[in-house]
Length: 92
Image (cartoon, rainbow, N blue to C red):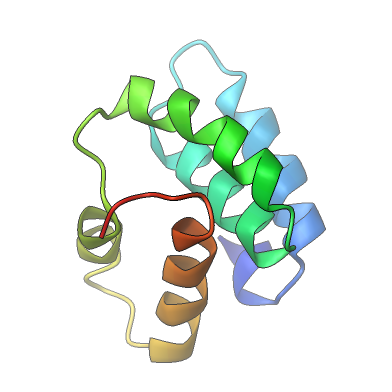
């Protein structure tokens, strides 16, 4: 999330994919990768990764993602993350 917040989307995507390879990875690195790909304008890749995210968390939506960041007071960061997720077709 640090790279994403600094608008270093390529690094954010790279490290999110690395984290997603861990055997005990939760849905979060998949969400971060999808949001990063969306922010990079790599929409087809974001859409292709969406099923992997939903495999980990079938009920995941942008509303759920926003709730994950209940502690974040940076509205611009949240909007950027939600926009990246929306580019993949993740439901609201």
